[in-house]
Amino acid sequence: MSTFRGVDHVGVGVPDIDAAVRFYGRVGFSDVLFDYTGDVPGPDRSARVVMLGNPGATPIGPGRIKLVQVLDGDGPPPAPTGGGWGELGICEICLHARAVDHVHRQLVAAGAESLMEPLAADVQPHDVSLDIAYVADPWQGKLELIEWTGLWRSLPGNPRAEGVNHVAFGVADIDRTRAFYERLGFTEMLFESTDFFDPMAPWYPGEPPDQHMIMMLSAQGGAIEPVVLDPPGPDCRGEWGHIGPFEFAVGVGNLEQGVARLRELGVDLRGEPQTIDVGTGEWRYAYFRDPDDLYVSLVEARY
Image (cartoon, rainbow, N blue to C red; front, side, top):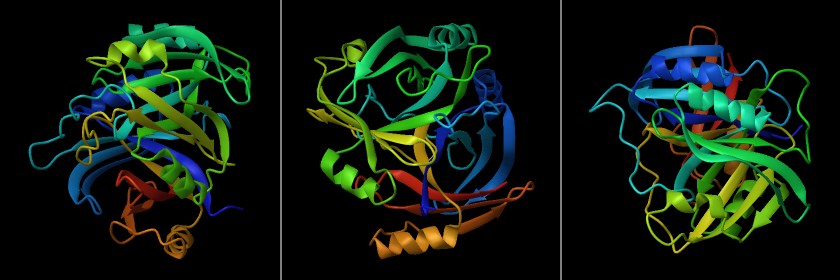
């Protein structure tokens, strides 16, 4: 089995974690895997961290959501300014959903803002069809809804979200990022596009930039969607725990083996591996440096 297991979860900074637990529970993330308050070594912040799982998760939406409310300093750092989509930093969570139009309506009724009405499209080079929509959560974090109709027709039953399908993030050099994450198991490219996605135009203050994006799949876990803008937008990496999506984690079955493999690959850690007792088990992680110095970690879930 591969050392690395795709995207395990995406971290989202929020100002009110109880309200966020209720909101994401309505999205389908109703399993509280742990609820921890205390020091978070690595970023060295005090925070409340709640890891949410989706009991309806499927092989194409296996990822979790980690909510973070920073408690020290001035509290949760604000979202970086100027974020349209694809600027350097973490820019979205994507949920695989059964019946995108219905789930989109449910989220808007729950307090989300519609950013893109549901539509159908397909992506190259494999001509894979999809249904897609976007909302902003109550704290303006971008949340994509997608049903990869050309890959997975979803489980039978009621409309619902089926877990995190991928995380999108802006980078400076798409080829450098692709080469880096291929070594971490993201070896299969689902699509590549150098065309601007016109429904995103209202998200930018002026003339929309050119976009170059790819989606890289792992044999397990969620996918990644790096994107480059031309011209580049603002630096939206922000502080650890800032409002909105701010990090993601690559799953491993054994943290020590994962860290050893990173070192073999010449990847630098941000600090020592950490183990935190979260009551229901252990949260084990190690932050490492990717080519754009994003907040990315390995995680071994023992909870």
